Image (tube, rainbow, N blue to C red; front, side, top):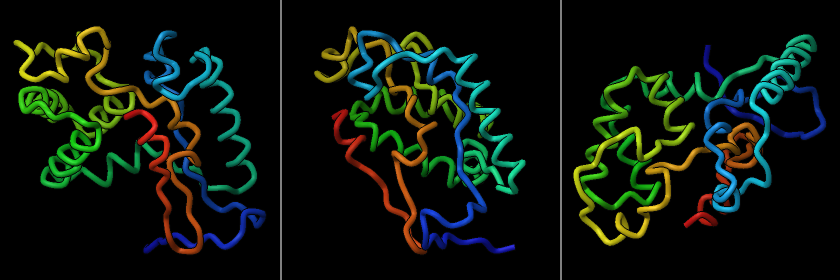
Amino acid sequence: MNSFINVTSEIGKLKKVLLHRPGKEVENLIPEYLGRLLFDDIPYLKIARQEHDRFAEVLRENGVEVLYLEELAAEAIENEDIKKEFLEEFLYESGITSETLKEALSSYLLSMPTREMIDTIMAGVRKEEIEIKEAHSLSELMMDDYPFYLDPMPNLYFTRDPGASIGNGLTINRMRTEARR
């Protein structure tokens, strides 16, 4: 069955919804870096998941098809060539300029099954997860105290923040991405 975006009303009957169940990205929130990650507080993951699960259940009870961002993303990049292309573009968009770091992150992430890779990207990659032999650029040296190579994405469960659909198109909100750079 072919499916396409066609949203013409914000008050019409909801048929499908794209959600993200809070995960490890919430556990990777660190008080001193909340501003950088555009977050105000650290939610309690257990409660956030319970609230999310109940919300999704209410949607389903009312005939709404619930789709999950992490499942769709993993499905979309299951092909190895597409997975590699996605990762290359993701690392570029993340501002990773060091070839050494790019190679280490690529090897680390590509060693995982696709869904685990997506979950890891969303959770963020801590420096302690990957061993880099030595810094090769000024930006690597400057980020020495920062605990992540790739930031966690705690705002993913606010699925309207990164993008919205109007008519049969999709708009991407780059303002949040640019605010971090």
